[in-house]
Image (cartoon, one colour):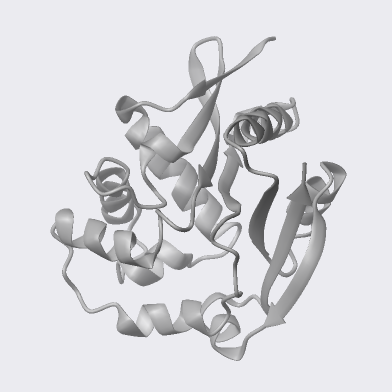
Length: 207
């Protein structure tokens, strides 16, 4: 069973939307996108995420930031690697306007700000590292990460970071096995109130 890693294309948007939603919930009833779009109805959230993946503005959910893992021609995993100096809050807000979503999300942003880190915008951020339910533990995530790190190195990056929820033990352990180190941990009452998780962990790797 051979895993193929490729750059995502616009036609992958429906699959990427599923992976983003799965990643954001991470076993919770409510994830960040449920909060942003004020609904936990899968159909609505997925429609908005698919649209965000295809905007002209390059936001963090844009398909061009993603690698896709395939088995027998079927997409089974994803990993997003974005540049925070490009795919930032401003680009995300512009993308929301582009897809026709103009609701006030200042309250939602307050939740994010309450548990944010002071990130170096010159590093690469990893996000939405996910695999399909029926294809877990077959090496998909490792293959995605190895390819992403190689691509990052070729682009001149030497540090990559990722943010994971406190308590996501399997994910944190996986990152550490790949060489990531825990840099900072932040507990946040507002984040815990909304998502039931104490806060976030910042991980980083030098390569």
